Image (tube, rainbow, N blue to C red; front, side, top):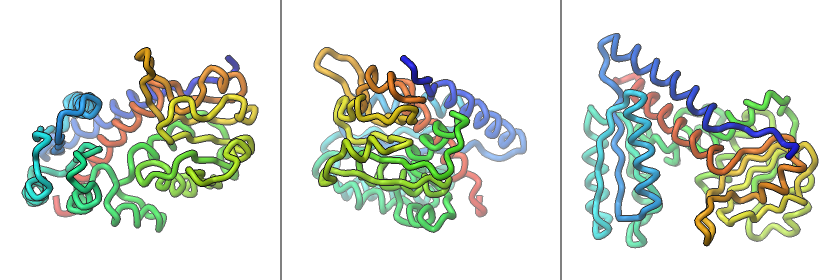
Length: 284
């Protein structure tokens, strides 16, 4: 293996320690600890794991976590009513609704209902719009965390060409906006992009977020490229793998994130950072 590992777990731990200090200083000054409502609908095992990790991070940092675990039968109107209640509570600074929601509930309708200044996921149209206008406030956590991982390499990223594989509203699209903020030229590839291999071969940075195990082949990677693998997939034998063919890509890349232990911990850490930001709103 020639690539250097980008240790997301260690970088996230350092950020969490800094955030813990911020909360300690806040409470020492007589202010309330940030309050985060975490809403889980249904019994998805994967979602339950993600929520448990987020609540654990809250406890570590000193953020007060309010748990709302709802049955799969919860209707959209019931969920909207809960969000309206949380929007109006002064002790709730941030609101997180774990995705995906059950099929009978529309994700966009629910996410749009969360007040923009309590949107710790950074998905509200107002927050995405501010990112587009180069004045970000609450930012989508995975793209924002990926920027920290890129910066941790110490490479001069300015002017590099990044290829994003995957055009979702959660990762791919906001990732392009984050890259523009640091002077990187992004290309977003999607299911209708022709000759994906050609795009990847030209990339100084590859960000894989397509949700298909080892979809990006190691032989496509430009020698010395930086790889941020957002994917986390479980194979039939129970192994966790990313969207990039890790072993083969590691022989060509300059830097690469592992799976697990790369992007995932940074996503949670950035969520905590957003939660603290919501508590520092001017009217708080």
